[in-house]
Amino acid sequence: MRNATMHNSAIFDANFNHDGIARGLKQFLMLETNIEDITFDKIIDYLILLIFVLKKYGYSKTEIKAYVRQFESAKERLFKSIPRSTYGSLLGMDSNKKIEGIYSFISRT
Image 1 (tube, rainbow, N blue to C red):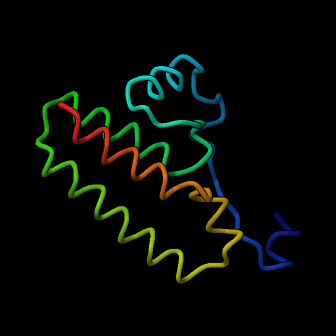
Image 2 (cartoon, rainbow, N blue to C red; image 1 turned 45 degrees about the horizontal axis):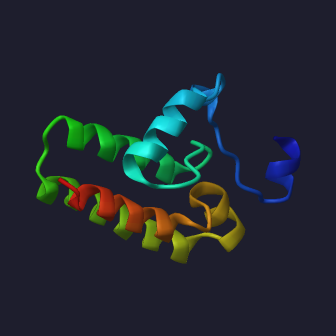
């Protein structure tokens, strides 16, 4: 931590994920959503899980898409305000592809 602060690097606390995510859950989500590379190393993978749960609980497509649009808006603001390497650490460089996959998943009946 000392080196990160001395070199003005980002520090992320992910203690909530110290045991990792079960491989079965990752595979299940990838099969159900048709979205590849769900690892829960990036924030967007948690959005995928949230969208999956909302859809299973019967939220309307309109409501779910509103969450995704809010996320996209926040993602764009973040992209403009932090270094590209930090952005990649948080969201991954495949976040746009995953968002497209989320919209496809939402649209399916």
